[in-house]
Image (tube, rainbow, N blue to C red; front, side, top):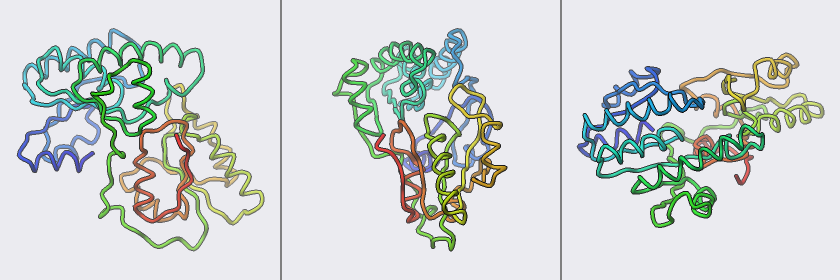
Length: 282
């Protein structure tokens, strides 16, 4: 969202960015924004830690007196909206970029988290002035579930793409499929790996790429789960990078068989570079 930050600054506003750690802080400051570290475990379920995060946001808002607060991803939306309301921030905007594991998985744990998150979303979005969704299905689910009033909602077609950076490129000589995602069940990683296996059996010359981290969270495949596919030469696995466009250039087809998305930025980036897309209506 660097381009959004740059655009806001170019309009004469000061921008403060909060984050749970100092990863990539130099890049954020290079945009012209001021960074404030507020520790937060994005996948944690400890209410004491979450309330500590909300309190830190409240104290920041009271100190800085921002005109607008924009939160995206679940915890910044929930606790940021509540904290901004309490701190008297004039304009509070929440952006729902997707619903993720809690709203897609059907395990007992996921259902329990979903029930708690629904209560928290309802309270938080009642504090927000505007709620931005990245697809109409998420908006409809939140409205029909009573989590937000329809008059607060806006739908946008994703976060946008810098078409100068992600410009059309020539196709590779070898047919190549590419998936860029965290290595999670909800992103369709199992389906992608199985498809790679099936195609490789009949067409061993086809190349399959995967870029994304195995994380120590409930929905993720482990490195051990992924290892056999790498060792057998079914896929080539790459770690995280700031130069994703270099990988799009190597592929003929971009694949994202996700179970639930907003409007995935990776699909927009691949389309901007002229790649064919295989994805889900999710």
